[in-house]
Image (cartoon, rainbow, N blue to C red; front, side):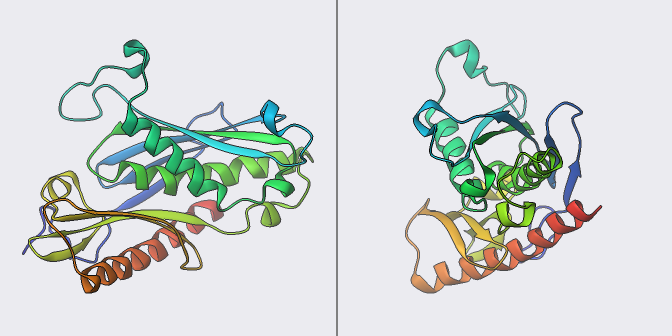
Length: 242
């Protein structure tokens, strides 16, 4: 069955990673997965949270948010509501966990990096785009620290692996890679997969939205995700080399 945008089942949407998109943060990337656009910024501060002081370890954390009109209807700002929603908290923690998997916190030294991932436009896969873009922003922030001799190790030692993420799902019985919104809402199975550039898994979030799924279907989805993450890793390296 044809996909809404004409892609093959194993094809990513066009991916763009635009570095230095914002002039103020130590790292910033506008990441685009098709019509999904997320601004990822990395802000460096000297020192670590109080509970980590004296450990010799750095800290990386993340916050995720959506602009009010990132979707087809306006959503209230959570700052105005006075309460951060459960979905927002879940995604923020996912991004933070994912990026801590690529960094040697001891080599980072007692420095902190906060990754802010703000969805400018949503068309499915916002959390996976955020993780993929945040890795590049984090790499630039670590490079900035290295330029000021503020690292306890070299950049390659601090950023010892790359991290990417992509969505996969089953629609009308067909496993598909990188779901856009029209597919995501109709998915029988929906999965978000975070991988390293070496093909290892960091996190797998999957659920049967409209039923259950078999082991062979799960294997097919994971194979799709690994192939997609390989392409995303190449896009990240190309962006960092530019």
